[in-house]
Length: 338
Image 1 (cartoon, rainbow, N blue to C red):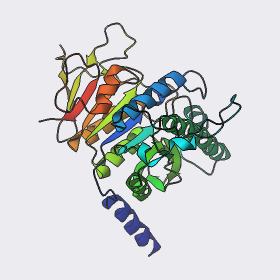
Image 2 (image 1 turned 135 degrees about the vertical axis):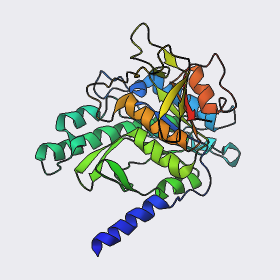
Image 3 (image 1 turned 45 degrees about the vertical axis):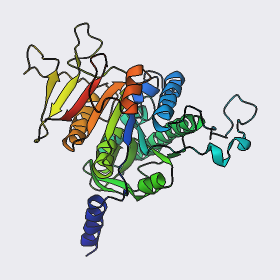
Image 4 (image 1 turned 90 degrees about the vertical axis):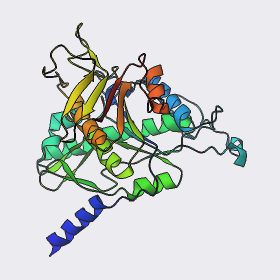
């Protein structure tokens, strides 16, 4: 009886969308872009600040920067930076309905891989300790991302999947309470979610990647478009560090979920694209990104994969690519086969 009750709750949570209006855009901040991936728990402050500025430009139509909302004391500073007098009725600026999700980069991956949290077995002391350590790491990064957005005047709110009631069953999302995300947006806030260590009904625990979170959110919130901000210009036919690597400018997704390269025309179109993974990446790297982008594209939603903090990323965030893709734009578009 209790099992049937739980099954019904799961079906309800995955079958009903709490979003009252469509979302304008979902943005993924790649962990490799906003952190220094080879330095443990080191944020790339310059990139994060630039990304936050571009998000403000995309979300807030006014050219005037709104008052900052990070009133906490930063390390090394003698005082907080806030001026409540800046907040008047005339200063209230409407933000477009965005959702931000970020990866972990040099936060969380180390702890998760050392303890094998992604494989489950929560009854093992090392796994339980790693679960706690991973969440400490990723939530600390989430706070810094929220603060960076808040300093730009974006009313950002950190929301952890674990705390919001996201669960998996053998690594597939079985339950996700999206009501808190929807209510935050309806209240004028910008939710900021992140890849997280969560409980799994079969394995005990696992890692839920930001890319999987985005495809799930897109299914229920129906954004106009989705932007993945990465540390490279897009998807390549091989590791982009190789001299002959080719940027794949457009990938088409068929109804069965399979995908093919449309632009440029590759000499050997049957060649398997080499999507290598970083050794410490417990979430699937570029392979997962493409798979989840394909799921989103099947919904009729364009996905733009582009290098963060560039003129190309700003055009993607602004929605400038929805009508046509300029020849001088560097990035990868993943869209349904039309």
